[in-house]
Amino acid sequence: MSPLVDIHTHLRHSSADIIEVACLDFCQLHTTHKGDINAICRTVNERGNSIALGIHPWNTGSLPPEYTETMRTVVQKCPSIMFIGEAGLDKTRPIDMNQQEEVFVSQIELSEVSGLPMVIHCVKAFDELLRIRKLLSPIQKWIIHGFRGKPDQARQLLRAGLDISLGEHFNIEVPRVVPLNHLWVETDMSDKPLLSVYSAISEAMGIKPELLAENIHQRFSELSSKSLPSSMLAPM
Ligand SMILES: [Zn+2]
Image 1 (cartoon, protein in one colour):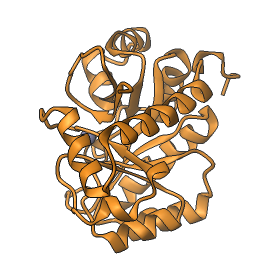
Image 2: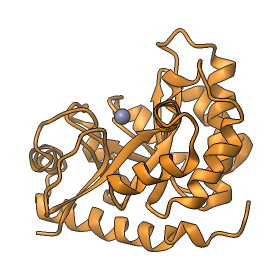
Image 3: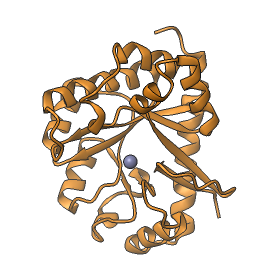
């Protein structure tokens, strides 16, 4: 069986047959390291080879000064950053939506200029998300992580060109409406074994977990060969 790719996790699974995209929050790193860019990069690179770095919509209320420029520099300096995210919109949080949108848009711009795909957190704000996408016409891949919506909403996102990632909790009808080439698997905050998440999703699709694992691994390899090495990017 191909190595299992976990496209979005906040935990450390550290298993030889798992490739995990560890998600780190820029604001937390900035606070911990008091804005020291070299220290932030050291922590990022120590965490693994495939990192998602972003500003979570929950943290958009308390941003470091000049966060856009600082984050750009970090992305430029850290070869292990493979995704921008998780970033996005969340209407269930008491944070001004204009502020959330502004921070999301700045991360979309970073994703485009650095050639890195996005991992997106979106809760009850899909209309806003699709409006922004239409306005900016991004080229980079967008993956909606932890999708728990219904098949109709999944179809709407797929029509707009987005990929969907499913985790421990998903609508059982969704895996059948997402084409294999646009589907990802994640554990996020769950400590449920990744293999059992793969098994549940592949069962709902009516395919073998090996096929799902192989397909995702193949696409992940293509993404990583495109995004590396980010340290070679032209100055932004
Ligand atoms: Zn997450």
